[in-house]
Image 1 (spheres, helix red, strand yellow):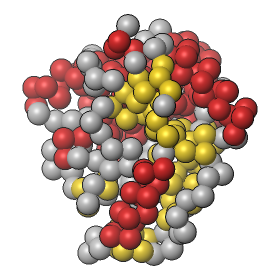
Image 2 (cartoon, each protein chain N blue to C red):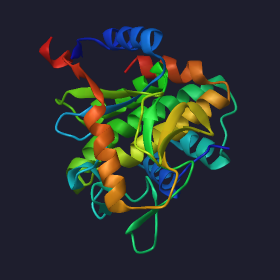
Image 3 (cartoon, chains in turn green, cyan):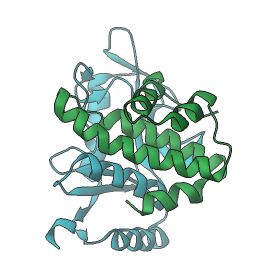
Length: 96
Length: 161
């Protein structure tokens, strides 16, 4: 299970999965587990796409999503590390 | 005061510090921000801050005058280069055009009584600066200010390239 600390984390991820039209990300998040290296890479890429898109959304709405995104990345890094996908996370993050 | 011009400089500097002094606990902070407190512009609209502390970071009493001990709640610190790199990249992405400095403190450093660094049970590369005894928010603010005043800074000079 993905160890969310705040329910708003999952709500935001699912909202962005819809905004980015990413049904695979939505399926993985609703399933609450990553089941392959390919899925791990997909979710890591999705996270950074969500960060980029949030800058546009924040500008339009006057919101600031940085704090909740920090909670999400802490949750994701914990999950990728504990489930053996740390390399996939790093591979995607290092390309940023 | 140290500076880094590329991320590998930061990695190498932190690794050297760890060899010399022991584990570091670090927080990347965009320019203009405090290493321990939030401003209203740092958080989502409608998010409640109590004297610069996020409600979600500590366990507050209903009246919000007190902070209740919790060993898995507190300000977040990275205890590992890979963890710090992720948070740093997030802060950079969310603050385009701003430098992001890295504030750090030694894990074994003296910190005020009734504050304690505790590893996240879900990821030991991540620590919380917890409170160990019920205290007023005013007391927590004083203790966090004390910590902030003693944190060292590695300045982001990437923009100077």
